[in-house]
Image 1: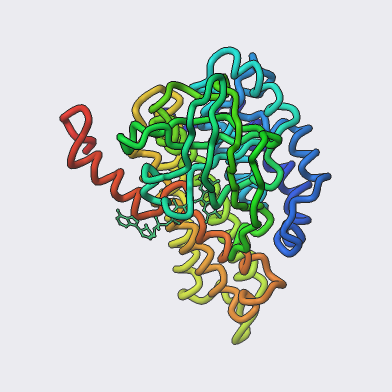
Image 2 (image 1 turned 90 degrees about the vertical axis):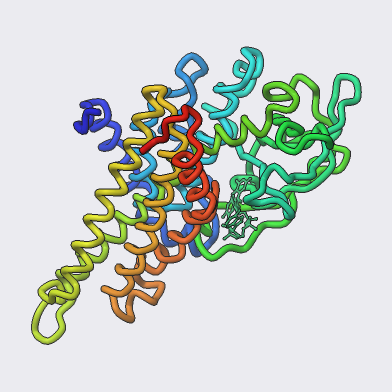
Length: 386
Ligand SMILES: Cc1cc2nc3c(=O)[nH]c(=O)nc-3n(C[C@H](O)[C@H](O)[C@H](O)COP(=O)(O)OP(=O)(O)OC[C@H]3O[C@@H](n4cnc5c(N)ncnc54)[C@H](O)[C@@H]3O)c2cc1C
């Protein structure tokens, strides 16, 4: 593995950083306070191709590799974790499975629109099934050339504005995992209702909604992959998504370190900048070291994905580590800011709230540990990963 970024990757970082610092950072506080990404910023993100990142070039996308994607996601999240997750869900868990599992007709139908115009969402979680996602109960019954879906989904990121949903439903009651099928459901599908908005602790600028499906009719041609293969679609989609969340966590952690070190230089107590005190230096040193370690793990998982090497447990390790580092770094950043870190005047308060979710979505830290432990104890190749 070459640890040197290519010239193209460096350019991608410079472009993403310049966009994030110029267009997102100045309004990140307002996005959080008003719980909305302004339409003008959505348009700029769209015009700068952030919603086309993972879509292959032949379908009008940019087709960046996973390493490039991590670099961009970290830069966006450094300015606003809410904006980063909006872009990440669209690319990696909505457009991603269409690109990977879609038929030529499905790819030609949806990917160009997702690259240029539409927003995507991913609906797996239900009120009764979170970590145990294979226990989902939304039913899809085949009737002629349609499926009729009934049930509900929750925690759907981007759901308020999404034009198309990758949605998982049960087509067989007999089998748990193999009874699940993936569908592509357009926003105007008859019987699909966008439900209540979920009021959250952090990433408040990212919309999260419930969905209700009442006799929702979906053409059979909108089935993604075969009947009974939906759980596989979902799990492989989440493997990739976890690298994106790890990158998001890195961005929050790096923003926390940037803010903490700035404040440590500027804030005087006892006649010295607080950065002169060893207690503060140790916190900064720990933050820096942990961030570098988490970044290496995240880039490794992304590099493995690019090389087509099985990377599932590495994506879990990256997410587990980077999310813990984000929470630690945001906590230390608030500590270094003292009482001011607890106020809305400083961005570290937002980082502290935003960091937590990276330990929860796209599989909690407990679920990542299960994936990692299984890869060691029950390796698929019989050799183990250690
Ligand atoms: C802001 C936000 C956005 C989200 N966006 C999406 C989205 O776009 N699409 C989507 O489908 N979902 C989304 N989710 C849902 C998210 O993926 C789930 O919340 C997550 O998978 C956990 O499920 P749960 O909340 O039902 O918790 P539960 O599964 O009920 O877990 C509760 C606790 O028990 C632990 N636990 C559960 N099972 C085990 C076990 N076997 N061993 C040890 N511990 C266990 C968990 O780790 C957790 O600590 C989002 C969630 C949030 C908060």
